[in-house]
Image 1 (tube, rainbow, N blue to C red):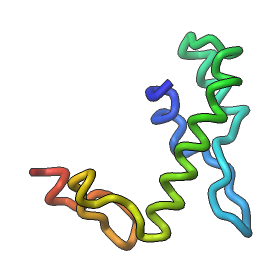
Image 2 (cartoon, helix red, strand yellow; image 1 turned 180 degrees about the horizontal axis):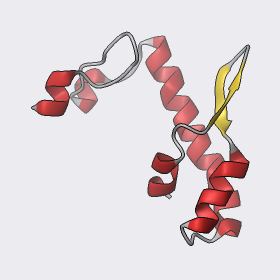
Image 3 (cartoon, one colour; image 1 turned 90 degrees about the horizontal axis):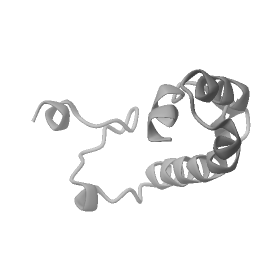
Length: 88
């Protein structure tokens, strides 16, 4: 499931009011089928993946992302990991 979520990370539904609201499910399910996943199981699991993703995005936006807990230095511009974290 993680592999599928990572492959579809750029296929998100965006709302004018709320920002990211979840994955584009049609593309998510098509990708799952192509990769040989059990699409019936994915239909159930996608809700949990989206919920976790949206909770983490909310944490990051509110500034409550556990930097010490995760050992990450966040880039304020795009919420990404800093260059020094990537390259050691």
